[in-house]
Length: 459
Image (tube, rainbow, N blue to C red):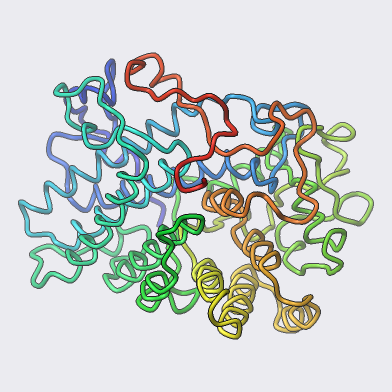
């Protein structure tokens, strides 16, 4: 049934939100919102935030490439991500309004979902920017120019929120339970949200792979309570109109060039880089007019007019960009690759099996036949850390956490080179703070000397 989720909460404007909106209000705030309406809003908007962040980071990991030469995102130029930054903060503002209602109504399940989604959104934001307003944010006029919390502190808060979320979801006798129609991620399944919480915890713990605190045992313990199959995946499958990546493919098909695939990504799948053709490629894009698969070199721009099908782009028939394509937030395939990495140095057999499980889960997800999957797995080279990260790179197509992986791995993917016309001499490691912050909260915005500066977990 078609529903308009964003308009649902936009009937009445709220009061001024101070730091978040000096001259405007959150259009999703109401004076007396229904708690399940807020559930719809925060689950949907989290998906939109994942799309918006992925539409930046997918260029940094060279899954996508601009059809225009020297495009800002391709060549590591400063971009203004003010809208993405603001939308994440507004989503958490809605989360906190839902949590306040949950306290009034003993709606502990809604509280748990809110705590998990705050951890998800802030984990995504701090993964791009590092330090950010947190402890003084969402406090109206009390802090019009909030201080920045250290990225490490935000990270710790996210882990604590996950634990609180799990406890809230398990709390007995809620007076209001999750509404299946308005929970756009797990359709009201408390068990589904608990599994997502534990899998998200494993993702965040895995982010510390370069740090002394990296704890494979803790990661594996979290995964033990997390996803066990593709059916557990956190995803948005209902949209206001077109599913979001489908909208990109439709725009491109209409001549508004977008969603072009990087030569790096295409060559990793078409046999050029690894010597084996990946059966997922035809389920992502279409062949060119030459009957083969060709990508666009990041920073170099398209070859030809852009309308002659000389290069590959997201297909309106592809798994990730077809009509109604799901927007993935967290997957079983990712969980298996996290397990493979956690086991890698201590139990090679379990690491290898988790690696195979991750490949198989993603292939099943996108629709690879059993025969093609078996053949591909039989042709894989000897298992290595390089192949683990490469296969996760393919399975994490268009997902923001893929950029976290690239930085943790120091971009050591085979034949992964700087984009043409790059403005840095090394790979990008962070994004600059948005203009909305440097103009309104300049005194607190940390200095960024270079987009090649590592965030705290990347050092």
